[in-house]
Image (cartoon, rainbow, N blue to C red; front, top):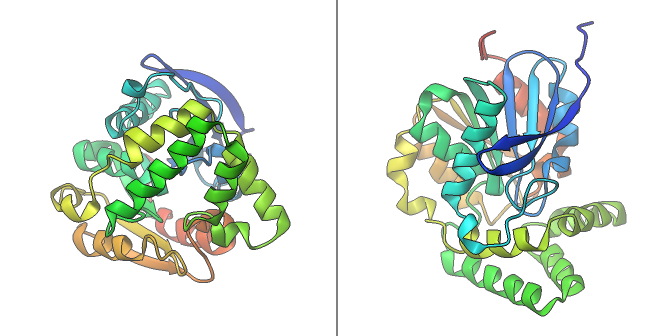
Length: 281
């Protein structure tokens, strides 16, 4: 049995931002980018499965978990998240990696694959593009949650988030799943929640208006979507049909939070797709 490198937790600098990173395993590098209000802890099933064959890097995005959460709205944008990803790769001296972007994490993953193709060996976009076919719905959700944050009504914020299309299927699976999802949300700094909502999610460009970016992706791409993730189903089809050399796989019995709801099926799809990475990543 191959020796597994112990999971290392560290804080690294990506520009002026302190980033909390988990780094485990040996082999071709795979970088995991989490979703909104989730943090890198959401990837524990995937880290455990992948680290026997790959170097698995997961980090808390700007405004999430133990990474810095700037107190100014001007320090948040889709461009900031994309630059942070490059900064993490540079700090860890990773020239080229497979990038797995889930939900919010799909934005920087896609941006890197389109703008710096030499740095992405393979691309996975999982449950990406929620509401891309109905931007007003996402903007309304962001405004509602932002209003609850400004009022300081965090209990109602968490409850409303757990009722949303993003989290409700997972939250309804069991009391344990509901507590886990609520814990991930509550572990997200308030400034991170507020400004990711207002400056990233509410202002993002619909994927249906970004086909030029999608066509620029050169890496082999796997698009994953939960069978019951109705918020992302149309976007998933768009991604698979527009990105060259892309394939679509539907995760049965899963809503939006596929990595947590159906980890075995999600991991099997990842392993099958990533198995073709050469020794140089």
